[in-house]
Structures are given as C-alpha cells and as structure tokens.
Figure (spheres, one colour):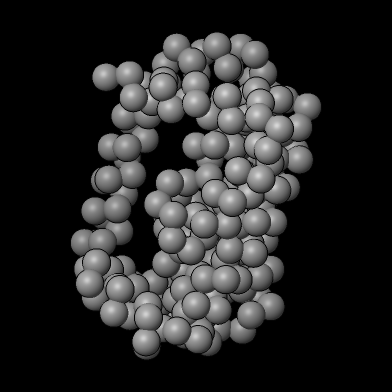
Amino acid sequence: MKIFSKMYETCLRWAKHRHASYYLGAMSFAESTFFPIPVDVMLAPMCLARLEKAWRYALIATMTSVLGGIFGYLLGLLFFDTLIEPLLVQFNYMDTYHKATEWFDAYGVWVVFVVGFAPIPYKVFTISAGALNMALLPFVIASLFGRAGRFFLVAGLMRAGGEKMEKKLHETIDVVGWIVVIVAILGYLMYKYA
C-alpha cells in the first residue's frame, strides 16, 4: 500500500505553501500536548522541499514545541485532578503516566531532555512534569535542548542529503514508513509493558 508516499507528497505540497511555517508550528505545538503524529513527519519533507529554510523550520518546530510543552505543563499543574486524570483513566494511559512519574523520580529534569530528543511521547512528560509540580525553568531548559537537538538533527540530515536524499526517500518512503510504524508500536509496547 502506498499510504506513506501519498502522505509524503501531501507534506511536500504543504511545505511549498505560503503558510507552511504556520502549519509546522501548529503541529509542533499540538504534538507536545495531545497530537499523536511526530513533528518529524512534516519537518523532514519541508526541509527537503526548501533546503535553504531547513534551519528556520527546525527553529520554528523547536520553539513551538517548547511552548506546547509549557502548555502541557500548565495543564498538568492546574487541571490534572479535574481534567487530565479522568482522560488518562478513560483512555487507559494511567500506566504510562505512572511510568513517567517513576522516571521523573529516578532521573529528574534529565528525563525531559532525553524524551525531548527521543521518539517517546513527549506529551506524557510535559503533563506529568506539571502534575508533579516540577520546577518550570529546568523543565523549559531541558525541553529546549532536547527538542532542538532532535529537530536540528533532522534539518541537518535533510540538508546534507539534499536532492539525492529527496529522490531516495521518495522511492523508499512506503518501506521506511512501515518500518517506522512497526518500530513505534514495538517501542510503545516495550515502554508500556516493560
């Protein structure tokens, strides 16, 4: 099935749209609190479509992701008992939340840095940080470095590969997409049940 090549072509069209930066920023903000699709899905094709703007796109993704992380933090801080916890119970995410709190207890602010860079759900940690009343400034600094590390790495890889990478990615996007889905599912299962 050519699902990913169609999505990739759509992302390339969006990347050339005059409001592409706004789409990226909105997606990055939302992904930090509730949106399930990683920002990289839009960031990589945008960087490939406009190599000269790759660093700018990485900066937009970083800043809006950190702002979304602060919003998630505030949701956890102010509305955990009344709004967030019932949703976590309803959607069976309490185990994930408890694992996040264990990681905060064990690693402190460093877990935010690692999660900001890794493909682990950043949104769970933004909300958990607020619910646990973690110090806001270290949370923001760790988020900034973690998310910047991830997004600037993506932008750098796209710039380094340039048109060759775009062509190769276009040819293999469906295989790569399914591999990413399988790895994400396995990672989630390991994360949830380990």
